[in-house]
Amino acid sequence: MFMQRVAIGRWLLIATVALPVPSLPAGAQEESSPAAATGIVQAETPVTETPAAPSTDQASQEAVRVEPLPEEPPAPASPVSPPVQPPLTPLEILAKARQALHIEPDAQEPRLTLGRTLFQLGDTDGAIDEYRTALRFHPTVAQAHLDLGTALMAKQDWRTAMTELQEAVRLDPMLVQAHYSMGTIHYTRGNIQSAIKAYQEALRLKPDFAEAHYRLGLVLKVAGKDKDAAQELEAAALAGLAKAQYFLGNAYRSGQGVEKSQIMAITWWAQAFEQGLPEAAQALTQLRRLAAVKGNLQTKQSKAAAEAFKNYCDQIWLDFPDLDRDQPTETVGTTLLKQGRTAEALPVLLREAYALNEISHATLVQLYEQGLDGQLPPHGQWILSYLESTAADGAVPSRMALARIYGKGLGLAPDQAKAKSYLKGLPKDDVKRILDDVAAEPPKP
Image (cartoon, rainbow, N blue to C red; front, side):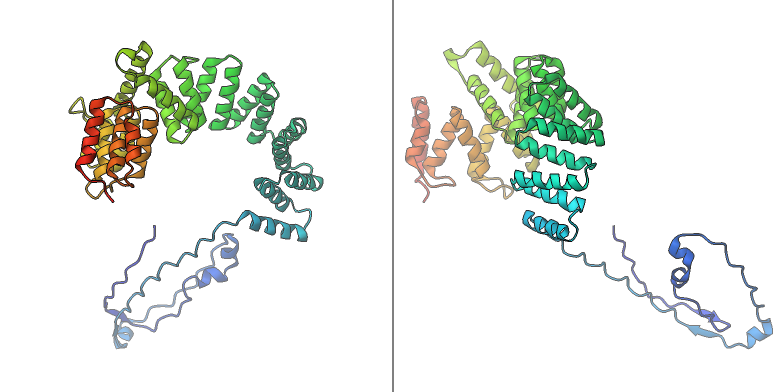
């Protein structure tokens, strides 16, 4: 925090009875002192004897001068921060590294930087050459062996890569990434127990290594240790790894290593879906289609799926302990919206609507068509994407909403053919109601 001193000009009376003794400018003593420069504290200089003060008669004969205290100068303006330089592009990094190596061919860091940049750009062979050159000059650098091993893994040269990684660990047992990569090679070659040990060693050194928890969970599952696998997947899922969230959802859906729970499956799949994982989207789609079955076609499984989605929406209330549920029909999203907490409400409404909550769905349709009091413009593309996604899953409310949107041209060009395509197979009464609604208002240009 910058503190600004405010200079307040004021006039004070000072009486001087003798000529002022000149003094060094502030800081001059420290600059001239070798002790100050080196940080060494020296013995204090003996204090010289202070001259005797003038007698009272003599002092009274001196002219008393009265002068104002000069104003304190204003604090200098905060120095302007230099403009932030944009990061170097890979090609610029290559140029700098090659320039440094031209001057000093055996320099370690420029050589490794060159290799890593080539590897990043997809020139794996070039990277391998640079790493091997670095090791000719510096054979005991563990990081160089690790980098070479990583590049060899990309070439699927597992045997040579393992040799380099083992040498890296021999030189520096604390290299977490080397242990992790060895686990991956062991797993790829079918050495399950060795893979488990390597991942466990990586986690011993770095307990919050989410990717290692995830990989260890998969290997433990292959080894038939479902309970241990679920624990590792949960650690990775809690760290936010979407792949782990998806597989943990699968574990809860099937009851492998954890107590079977469709609510928990939906919870973890939803988190992975929000991060854009396609597998999670597909899992939720299949469960939604099962839950959407109504009437005589409804089975025990479809009823259970519908109940799971309902319970999932109810559990969202636990994330907002400050909210009171005044009416059974209220959702967390609609309650937040009513309180003016729009930024919090919108993602929750979307989450609830994806979980087949009809109230949140209707609220989103209204927000798409009308917006919200200057806080949210109408025709949000994110709402349209939700409607199209769930309509493709067969959700009737979304199909009806899209038929109205395309029929009236709300936020897009009117398309009567597309509007009617969303109405195919729906009950005749619903089709007539939507078509009458569209016909009552001419399509927008």
